[in-house]
Length: 159
Image: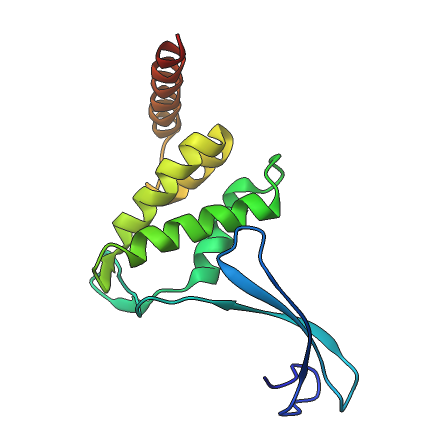
């Protein structure tokens, strides 16, 4: 593994352990050239995924882009980094086991919406406003109505 600081080609693994959700190996590394320490993650990848955008353009799936969009929706909400990472891993796992290597972006968005609805209502509305391209206040009212009806169904299921 190349050192991100000095570019040396040979770095040493100091510590390895599974991530909190056991979907990756976290490795602490050090560079014998400059002494820098950094962390890498090793994940299983079942297949190369391609996302088909609404425009028809095909782009490689980017786990970090998915994570960033979820982090933006959950910013300043009481949701820990480990829960976000677990949520991202769940979505990636669903995509990989779908047996499709080309996946429409709407499918990814639907998975995120379903998960956020269960995780945090405010994050759900934030994500929905971008995903569904809200242009008027009534768009927010419609989504809030969806949340209220989902909460009502969950509450009646608990009885």
